[in-house]
Image (cartoon, rainbow, N blue to C red):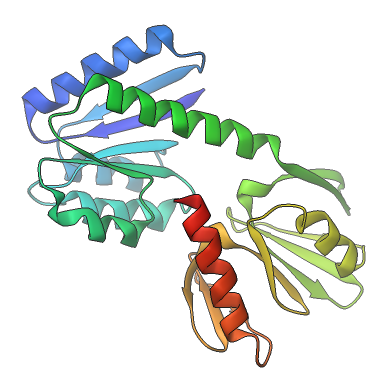
Length: 240
């Protein structure tokens, strides 16, 4: 079940979004449930209580928590949830990138635009969930969804797989084997001989290190800074 949250302080806009989502549910091949929030504070409170969603559709101009601030709050709890901003003004488009927004839709929200956006997100989510590797740790065979894998790290004769949940899987295999498995996917890059990183989780690339959305810091091999930046730029351009 895919869970969606829609948040808008304008009752008419919120009602319109709910009507469109209800209509979309009737034709969508994906099982979908949703919850509506009348302001940013209401949604922020739900997040603090542990409620989570796969997709957030957020109005930007709201009192209290505006959409950008709410997006940053969502990222504190969930690094991989998808965010779509809804607004009547294009001036916030650049700010939306600060929270890795999936899309930016201008109001009034048109049915075709929203439906196409939802279709793209669901198809991408489905594809990501189909991408996984299997590894063996002390508990047995583990399936790792690549959308949840932040990075892998060589540690002696073992490999540590760092997941977005904070969980770390310790596996007895050669790091070269892990790299062979992950290098098949275009969103992984190897900035250092002991690390391979999921570029979807990169926040900042500096000359000697990568800062991830999880706040982990990954070293960049000496002299490889420009290459890593170029690879990441190419990845982002293909993604957009």
